[in-house]
Amino acid sequence: MSAAWWQEGVIYQVYPRSFQDTDGDGVGDLKGIEARLDYLVDLGVDAIWISPIYPSPMADFGYDVADYCDVDPRFGTLAEFDRLLAAAHDKNIRVLLDFVPNHSSSRHLWFLASKSSRTNPKRDWYIWRDPAPGGGPPNNWISDFGGSAWEWDESTGQYYLHAFLKEQPDLNWRNPAVREAMYDVLRFWFARGVDGFRIDVLWHLIKAEGLPDNPPNPAYHAGMGEMHRVQQLHSTDQPEVLAIAEEMRKIADSCGERVLIGEIYLPLERLMHYYGRDVAGVHLPFNFQLLEAPWKAEVLARMIAEYEAALPSGGWPNWVLGNHDRPRIAARIGEAQARVAAVLLLTLRGTPTIYYGDELGLGHVEIPAAWVQDPRELREPGLGLGRDPVRTPMPWDATPNGGFSTAVPWLPLCSDFADRNVARLEQVPGSMLTLYRQLLALRRAHSALSIGTFALLDASSAAPDVLAYERRHGDERLLIALNLGSTPRELALPAWAHDARRLLSTVESGDSRFGSGTETGTRVVLGADEGLVLAPSFAPEV
Ligand code: GLC
Image (cartoon, rainbow, N blue to C red; front, side, top):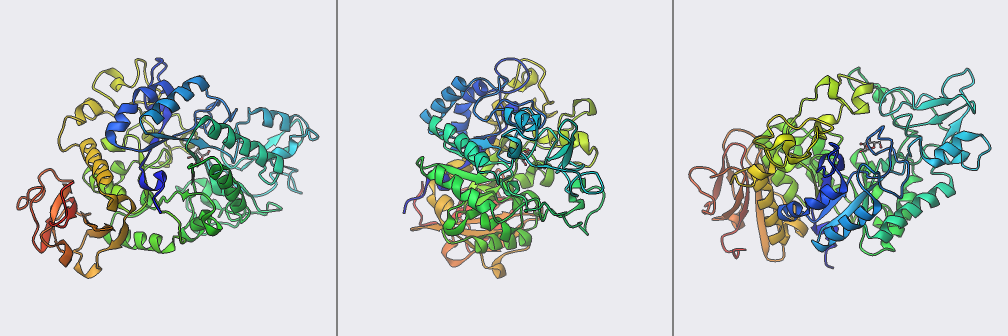
């Protein structure tokens, strides 16, 4: 069986507010993405996922949708979306949209109707409840952004549920009319030609019948974010959600080769359920383990092995190194190791998702207090939960505002954008951008890296701090060796990789004893922070 595009391909997440502004309002737009398609082609990615572009009051920067079938004027028009999609397809780039089914904006017409009276036909489209017997919210559920998950509505005398902001009321997915309306949204965009969706907070859609209190979390401590006060046992991850994933999958499959990716933050064994029975759920339940894993060879080795072992038969793996909600990889592990992480992301088995700007090594961007935009930070300040630092404008060149906009951008650029920008980094041989391009080219040239099998190198031959594994497809066999530490390490090579050639190193000239391209012998020395891709010397040059 040949691999589907979403198995072989690499996805790139575009945060549209911050990619490229063309109309001078300091916020990115669809025309801007279109203008930068050639950059994505040169980078070598296969698909983009664009975070929400729908009309929105922007209480949660687009994750509060006021109309699922249109484009917010800040981003452009439906016609401009169609143009972007056609231009992307011309260049062989697929386009995924962000589907936000758990909640709408409180300004969506559905919610306005629902809120207008207890007898409105849309009342049951959202989750309304009377106060608890003694008064106050119906149960102890806490919003992911802190505070009660219930908001009192004075005019109809009931509370409504919101897992996030009060401006994001939860839809009632137990109501078949809601399901049909939301499935029509999928059909609307599929008919326009989108290649798939990333599904926002998929595991939240269904809540336990009766909405029982969530149990307290014994591990809670201040500093975690108030949402962790309770375990989300009854408010998320209910078995009925899987039938919904399967229904969505049926719609996707009826439209040709489309992909559904579920945003799901759950422990491994729960995550795997979202592949669905007979892998008929979402194609890719996002695997977020690398976002938090301690950066240690033995921890990663165990994590990868457990993930591989837990996959259902026929379930395709995937890996994520960054997104618009979590700290940047370079901020977390430093730039030298972020290069090693790039090799890991692009050589593990499974579909990789690259977060825009990580290919430039964007690190932590300090957001002055007066600039803070993210409601997460504004509601629970100072805990480091704010997401503005990972949503800053893409630095394209060294001109004012980094070539992102002619106006003051909605968030500040990284302070080093005069050096850290696309125009400059593409000229620098050893830059992060060059490394990403090399890796993506290597991945395209060697199908072992995309669709090959995966095997960790026998732990006994691995050196401390070294994570090493093999990818194999047909006659092709490649060895990836990553030094996760800053001490040079020597690794004994398996017999098949004796005298291997270096196809790629994260360190410009590699260990001084072996320049790139030279053969290794029976052992290889990995320099500090060095990641290597090796091919047996008898393998043909590509
Ligand atoms: C998802 C999004 C996040 C958003 C939340 C509510 O986790 O990734 O950005 O705030 O859902 O929609």
